[in-house]
Amino acid sequence: MSYVTAMSISYPPGLRELLEELETFGEHNDATTTDRASRMLNITPDTGAFLAVLVRSMAARNILEVGTSNGYSTVWLASAAAAVGGRVTTIDVNARKTELATHNLRRAGLERVVELHTGDAGVLLARGAAGHWDLIFLDADRKPYAAWWSDLWRGLRPNGLLVVDNAVSHAAEMEPLLERIRQEPGAAHVLVPVGKGELMVLKGTA
Ligand SMILES: C[S@@+](CC[C@H](N)C(=O)[O-])C[C@H]1O[C@@H](n2cnc3c(N)ncnc32)[C@H](O)[C@@H]1O
Image (cartoon, rainbow, N blue to C red; front, side, top):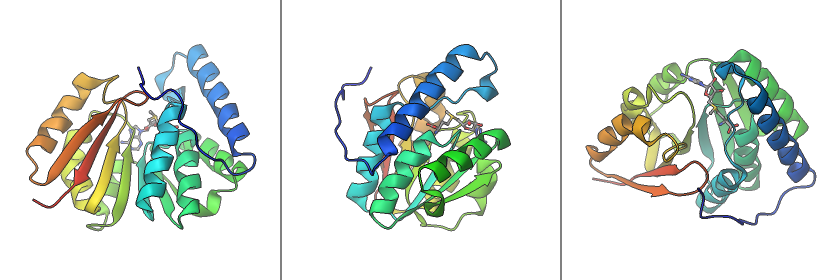
């Protein structure tokens, strides 16, 4: 359960309505489909507001999202990125979902702020340049997280931030990743009880 019940944030015209429409769509879709791949599994609205505050306070310019779904969280990240001259790269393995995300980002007027990829995030992370990302938001299938750790860590810039969703809702599945984080010199982590639980990992210097 979230302790943050009322986070107020200012929205560009029309954005709040679009976010609310996507929230209603996601809730209805996920309640009526049994096929996991067809579920949107969106972050909670307070997690969206939390991410937007992080992006703006860090003036994050290079943001990576792993797990786009239909672009609900991407809209939150991208609207905050647009306010500080940043950009979002986002990736999802499911082509139907990236099609939906393309449509939703266009509706939000944010398509120019976002580079959208369809494919396996592990490949993108392995090919990425060192020290590039200010902020990485991780919200995908949790099984490969621990195996991705060295590429996630390498990709973050010094004092960059990794935020991992579902750290409370799926705490047991997060353990292998946490084990890697605990062993990493310079990694400072804190669990923030917003939404489904956000694990924040700061790339400090050892
Ligand atoms: C929880 S949903 C993302 C929800 C999205 N962040 C939001 O709040 O709107 C997880 C997504 O990760 C995608 N995914 C799972 N494994 C992946 C992988 N290895 N690479 C890229 N995307 C992956 C799934 O297709 C799914 O759409």
